Amino acid sequence: MKKVVTFGEIMLRLTPPAMRRFSQASSFDVIYGGGESNVAVSLANYGIPVDFVTRLPQNDLGDCALMELRKRGVGTSHIARGGERLGIYFLEIGAVSRGAKVVYDRAHSGMSSIEAGMIDWATVFKDADWFHWTGITPAISQGAADACLEAIQMANKMGVTVSTDLNYRKKLWKYGKAPGEVMPELTAGCDVILGNEEDAEKHFGLHPDHVDVTQGDSIDGKAYLSVLKKLQEMFPRAKKVITTLRGSISASHNTWSGVMWDGKTLYEAPTYQITHIVDRVGGGDSFMGGLIYGLLTYPDDNQKALNFAVAASCLKHTIYGDANLSTVEEVEKLMGGDASGRVAR
Image (cartoon, rainbow, N blue to C red; front, side, top):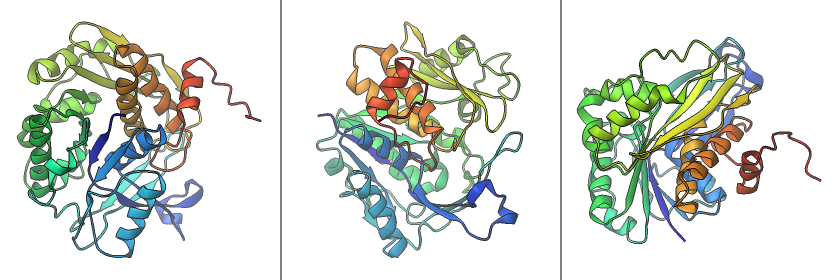
């Protein structure tokens, strides 16, 4: 069976319960998560062998993060230990017309102080078929960007498929480099590229004409074809370029879909109405986990792979926490048109 490796930071997430604001909080729910670890959990949940590579502090919180990964069936044998602390992020969940808020506290974390040479990538990729990283990792620090580039170059050398979720995070690019100085070299080594309209614009200056995601209840997938083509022209190694399509009616009601360009055909997924969002954090990660599963499981059916990714991430919006805990059976049921939510007895 195909094996996947993901690389990034797992953090401690602290959220006020019952959708309270930060100023109302007298306690916080504790969850462990992060973009790349969320992808790993999705894949493990679908039965795909997956290893997560990161650097965790040698303390109790680092151990807790490690236990969370192991509990979900994620391989941890290549995780390095070191650094001062575990990164933290605080999440205030939004509702209706009030958007969510995120406050990061990840300076001096084990992952932010990682450097090239700390991970033996040749050993990591010895039995791997796929490597996934996101734009969050090179935004953390120069050392994290260097380690990410080192991993991509080794994966390319060893014939491992490389994917990225561009994941622009304005609040993280603080160490003196702009995304445009770092991301092109990393993305050039990718076979599969995922990004939304903000990612393409902030990293590479690309934006679809006449698209405003803050207005309207639906997004036209064909409007993104020019951006997908330009991304493939910029990064010719990429065989598939994908974007998620989120129409934001409110914090509690989104439309959700996606499109894929393989150089010849534009594939468009069905559009879902997510009318009572439980937790939208990790929506893109669950899409990526579903996409990797779909491309590995249905290698000759791009449409089915895309449809699986969109359905999987639609279900994630119903699950509290960072990671998608949906099963393959649940995703396939939604793909088949059953969105009734009836009790399974």
